[in-house]
Amino acid sequence: MEKLIIRGGKRLKGEVEISGAKNSALPIMAASVLTSGNCLINKVPNLRDVMTMGRLLANLGAGFHYEDGKAIINAERIKILEAPYDLVKTMRASIVVLGPLLARFGRVRV
Image 1: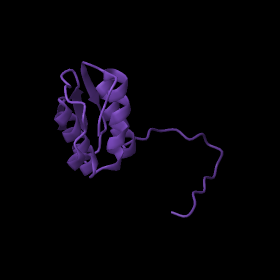
Image 2 (image 1 turned 90 degrees about the horizontal axis):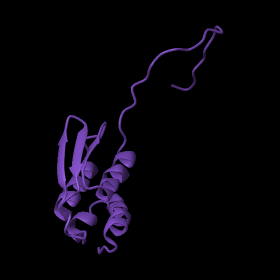
Image 3 (image 1 turned 90 degrees about the vertical axis):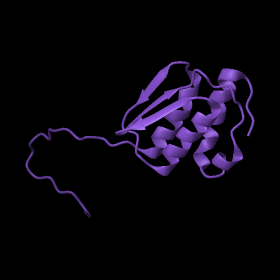
């Protein structure tokens, strides 16, 4: 579509369903590390990077479940403060986990 022409002077009205975005979901998933309860994140796209972030969080000790565009993360039992290189190297966004880990535990290692 090159342009959108609206004629008439009538007020536009309606609703638009907003889909999820990977670049929004990944930092939100990482921020779940700051809590010790369940985090429910809606409209999370089913993409490789999202699943890699879930595996990274699970590797640290968090619970991760994904179903029908919803991610449930529970970071209560995080004990490992080192992000494994084999997961970090596959996704640039994995760096966003470092800040929440450092804020919550005072140390982190990659």
